[in-house]
Image (cartoon, rainbow, N blue to C red; front, side, top):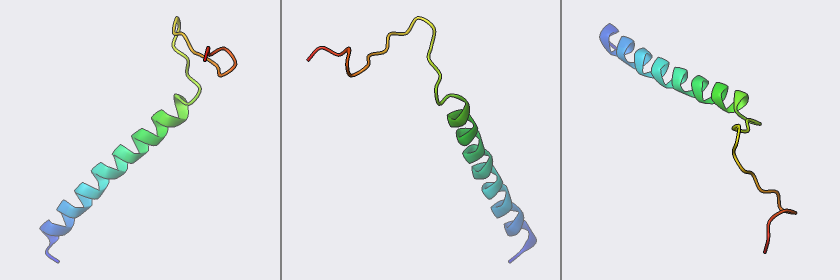
Length: 48
């Protein structure tokens, strides 16, 4: 495999890795986030 091809493949893999880490970090820190003023319904509060 030529050096240029290896560099391009490594760059593409790096970009996708950074994207995956960013999504995982966002999911971890926003897991129990509740926006101020937002209305949330629990099952027991929902009217059927």
